[in-house]
Image (cartoon, rainbow over all chains, first blue to last red; front, side, top):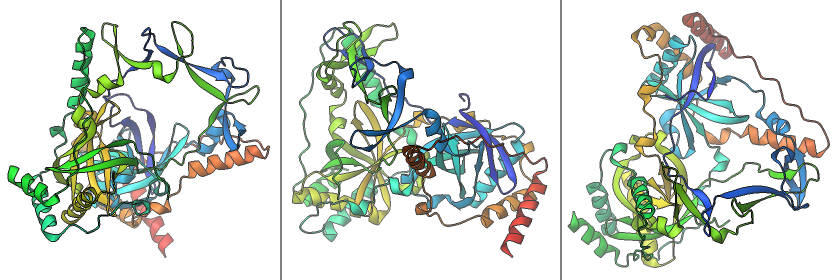
Length: 255
Length: 267
């Protein structure tokens, strides 16, 4: 496990659980550099003062919040950091909710919690109690000078912490204008679609889905490196289905 | 109604049924954004791109990507060539499997989007409605893969209030194994039955319905307040870090005191 990114204490009631926070996920994307197409040289970003039209060193940069057209309130990093509140090393679980009730649309990032110094018994106790009650503890976490809403639950023998989105950050699906068909799908169509869903139903096995793209991308890069020409396919758009019934019948017949 | 910008256009395919869709974000960015300013004169800073060899400004149209090989050589790759890797998945989310949503651990969830019908065409909107309805009725979610901005995503599609939501998911190899976490798994740390019962009692006592609306982003509120105070010419000071809580030497004692406090608070 890579080193922890935060150390602190989870509390519930008068019980304190020392913990270490680790990232639960890692980014495996292929990364590229920006280059100038003409000579292949790397692109360098420069900070230019829009008034003086000259480069500005980082130490002369301040942050501004726009309060009117072109009118800024200038703030130092210390003043921005003040918004983090008291920079607590404690995550107090003040409420517990049924873990299954939380729609995963609220889940943002996930972290694993490792046990902190002398916290073994308390860690195990919180883990087992959350597992037995199927609940998640809700609290606030100050990390990198920002306060997050978090949910702590047990998973496969470890405590996990999710940072959560706030309700007002999620777009309400009811506020969207979705174009509707002139007549709703018929009973027969729904039955056939349900059969198709059933025939494709299985249990969730995350390992069954591989990111083939990453490998194919690296292969393509290798071909390009050997001087091979890469043919660019024409963009083809799949035809929208006209005859829904016929498409459903043909899909079922294929299986 | 604000019309969100479409981030991806393509089709959602289900057997031989194709639904042309556009993807829009389901998350609203409510963060306060700061602009970089030149401290001396308060003028906004512009970030401009320069060629590191010629030291001249380079317009976007003349910028391409390069990949650094392990030996240090660089290979130039254009956006079009990147699309050649997987042209189909760049344009289509093909449903490969349906699963029960409860089986998918939230650890895999990344970013939520909405899929909306790309046209008002009757065939397209009916196919969209059919898929949303049948998934709602069977309480199932669909899994597929697609490519966006030269990265492949595993995606989970499900209806929410009649609208198809697509959530990008992490691939299994992007989630670290839990067995590498030091989680005090040894038998000696197992709580006694009495301790566990007491801890569950504390949790039950503090239990409530999940009501996401009841939590506000206090960081955002404080930051707005900081900006407001500063605007009025007041000074802003950072609060001192708080002391960490002590670890109770006796767990059972801490549990009993917690329950006793809760008991007296409830009377």
